[in-house]
Image (cartoon, rainbow, N blue to C red; front, side, top):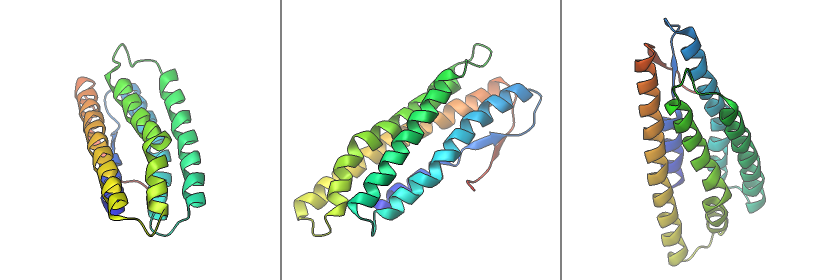
Length: 167
C-alpha cells in the first residue's frame, strides 16, 4: 500500500519543465509552477517512508509541515495571474495542490491512525486498503489532469517539454 502510494506520487509528480523556447515567458510561467511541485514532493516521499516504522507523532509532525507547505503553494499559485489570458495550467495546478492539501488535512488523519496501529485487525487492514485505493484513484485523476493541462499549455505556446526528474 505505502509502496503503491510512493511509486504513484513519484512517477506522476515528475513533471516536465519546458526547454528554452520561443516563448520564454510561457516557459518561466510553467517552470514556476513546477518548482512549487518539486519543493513539496521530497517531503511527501519522506512522509510515505515514515509509514513503515514511524510513530504517530512522527507522522503527525510531517503531516502538519506538508499541510503548511501545500497551503503556501496554493497561495502562491492563486496569486499568479493567468498567462496572457490562459488560465488552464493555473487551474490544473490549483486542483493538484488542493487535492493533496485536502488529503493531508482529511484522509491522512484516519490513515495515520490505522498505520500507527501495528497490530491492526482484518477490518482495519481492509479500511486502510479502501482509503488508500480511493485516494490513489483521486490522485491519479488529478495528476493526469495536470499533465494534460501542461502539455496543452506547451502546445498552445509552442514550448518543447523536457522531463526532469526530481532532485
